[in-house]
Amino acid sequence: MGTSEPIPLIHRRIPLSTGVQLHGVERRGRGTPIVCLHGIWGSWRNWLPLLDPDPCVLPGRPLFMVDLRGHGASDKPASGYALRDYVADIIALVETLGAPRAVLAGHSLGALIALAVARSVPERIAALVLEDPPLPLPNDPRHLDPFWQSFAEALFGLAAIKHRPLDEVVAQIREWLPDLPLDKAQEYATSVIETADG
Image 1 (cartoon, one colour):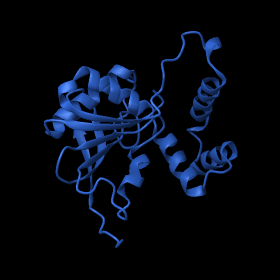
Image 2 (image 1 turned 180 degrees about the vertical axis):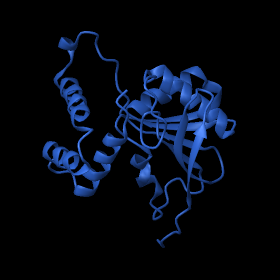
Image 3 (image 1 turned 120 degrees about the horizontal axis):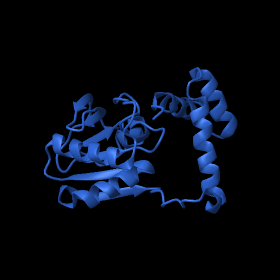
């Protein structure tokens, strides 16, 4: 297999009818666009493996990797971080991109958003690709199983360190995840720091 030339990426800030501007990175192509939605504490960079030119994933297909509101280089309003707010943004984004239909690929929070968007505007969604969609959590935290309890503790732990300098956040993440390579810890730390407090 020969090495393919990478397809140029275009960074865009898209104003939406919801009042926010979302940052996204576009790989142009032909066919139904694939809109990629990251998880909490994430950014468009979580989808970089899809851009490896050899072998090219989804060759020729347009990709739009978005930073959700409050994440990455997208707007970070003081409020508006309920699921309905994310869903309204992505519905508006699909409308703004102009394609009759889109595929939504979502990880974790992004998967939950994708499911809710598909429920709201099924005629606009050609397909869903869902990775680790979160299950509904019980109202009483005493009923959380150990995995979800540790997940909640990790979220609060990240919130507690996100305002520290990058090198300290990287060090803390590597302490929690000692097998995580340095470059991945730096990428993760950058995404955590770039996420709004909301």
